[in-house]
Image (tube, rainbow, N blue to C red; front, top):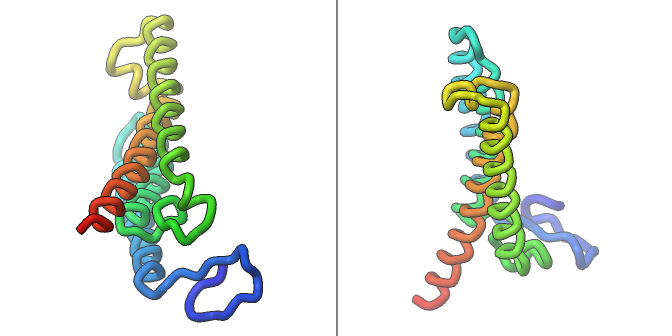
Length: 154
């Protein structure tokens, strides 16, 4: 994918405009500082597996959701071809997959007789956090498509 005002001979490559480049760079900065903050907190806490998972998935989700909600994501911009055209489908798939993973991880945790606190501190917390952030990513895609449709009407 080319960035900036570069000309492209290929029909399949798409160019970000300056606003989208700035949004993408700001999302990188926000996710970096999010990771640094959460990992600093994880150093202070004794059992930090949940916080390390939260830092990893949280930074990815923050990066993705910020750029999607501001309109700088291929899933939200219709000019990016199939990704933009079928963005709603990807959003629905992310939500459904996140819900399935979330409920399966909760059921497995109860089968293993974990308490509510152990669900978030056990080794299954990685799957639970991943499911929650998949749901957030899917919701951000669908909400951006809703905003695009609302802006087109106005």
